[in-house]
Image 1 (cartoon, rainbow, N blue to C red):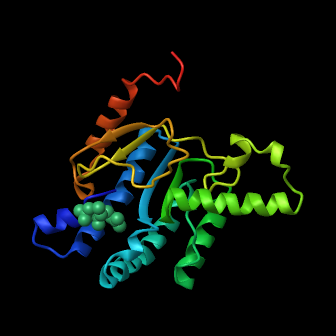
Image 2: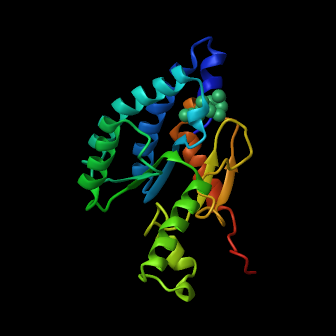
Length: 221
Ligand code: IPE
Ligand code: MG
């Protein structure tokens, strides 16, 4: 969901206004996914690297997150399963509790799955998995020779979630920026110049049409 800052700058507004608009677009896009019958949608909301931004921007993002976690809880009432990807430890306690509560409260839902990456990094996720695997090898729960891709995936934040089909990156940048690097190994990539706050259902539908026209071979012929 890239381009919030540039969207605001173009309008002579502070960056945080772009983030507010981006958060609204996130909410609307979840509903668009639901209407289109998409089963899983993932959003990269805050990366492990985003903490390096100026303090006032990080503070504004945390404030926004606090209010959006309430909206996300409402979302969860529509048989929606909410999963947060990333280490929750660095967030303030009230944010952390809201995240845990939302996950717990929606765990049995089986409609749309919404994955929200917060303090998430693909490399960080792999190291986190490795630490836990090493622990389980040490305590005898896992044998080194059992370790394969399937077992490894059980240690990722996306445990039991299918791999990515399509990654859409907005704002004209053509890179993955540490987003689900394991899960996206065979994902179709779509780069659009549209800034995230301008992203609409029309763009989402166009992305689905583009995706439908791709041939996926997964290394076969
Ligand atoms: C994405 O928009 C939102 C977050 C990373 C939280 P940016 O803030 O990266 O917007 P640009 O790239 O500066 O336009
Ligand atoms: Mg950016």
